[in-house]
Length: 317
Image 1 (cartoon, rainbow, N blue to C red):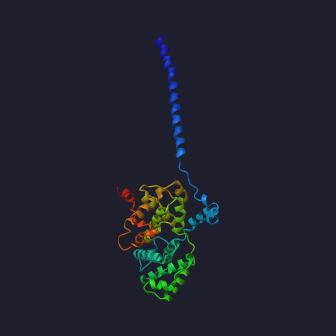
Image 2: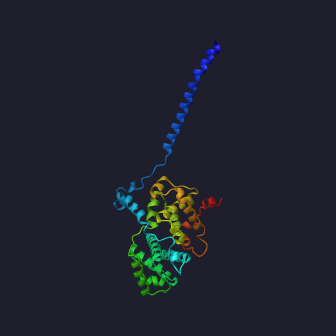
C-alpha cells in the first residue's frame, strides 16, 4: 500500500518537473532574444547633423547616390580594353598614371581632378588606338580637360608642355584635346571613386588618419589596370575597409557602412587583399609616386602605416 502511494506520487511529480524545465528553457530563449535585441548594431543616421545645411542637399542625397550607382555602370572603361591596343600595354598605363599622380600633386590640384583624369584616359583608350609616343600626351590632355571641369584655375597649356619636357607642342596638345572631347562626346559628368569615397567615409565616421590612408589606398588602385574590373563604388568601399583593418588591426565593417555602401564584408574581402598587396609593394620598384606623395606631413605620413599583412596571410594558410 505504501509503495503504491509512493509510486503514484512520483508519477504525479514527473509532469511538474518537465513543465518547470520547459518554462526555464523558454525563459532562457526569451532572454537570449532580448539580449540580441539589446546588442543589435544600430544604423547611424549620417545625414542628421546636416539637416539644416541646405548645401548638403540631405533630402536628395539618397536619390543622387542611387543615380550615381546606375551611371557608374555606363561610365567606366572595359576591364579588357587594353587587348585592343597594338602599341601600348598595361604596364605603360601604370607608369603614366603613377607619373600623373606626381604632376597632380605638384600643381596642387583638387582630389576630384585626379580621379576624373584617370577615368578620361581609360575611356579614351578604350575607343581610340594610340601609339606609345603619344601616350604621355593623352595623359596630359586628360588632366587638362579634368582641370577645366573641376578646377577654378586650370593650368596653362604651356605649363603642360613644359612638364612634359617639351615633348609635345601647343598645337599637338590642342589637337589631342579636340580628339578626346569628340571621342568621349563631351561626357565629363561621371561618378568616379572620389564621389563614393566622400559618402562612405562619412558612413565610416572617419577621422583624418583614416581618411588619408583610405585615399592613399584608393590611389594605389588607380595605378593598377586589373582594378578596372571593379566599379568605382566597390573600390571606394574596399579601400576604406582595408584602411580600417590596417589601422585597427582587426577586420571590421559596421552595419552603417554596409547599408550605405550596399557591400558586405565578405564581398569586399578579395578586393581588400589585393589592395593590401599593392600597399606592401608601394615603396618598391619604379611605381612609387603614391608612396612618396603620402610620405610627407601634409598627408599625415600615411605611407608609414604598416600594411594589414594578416589579411593576405589568411589566403596563404
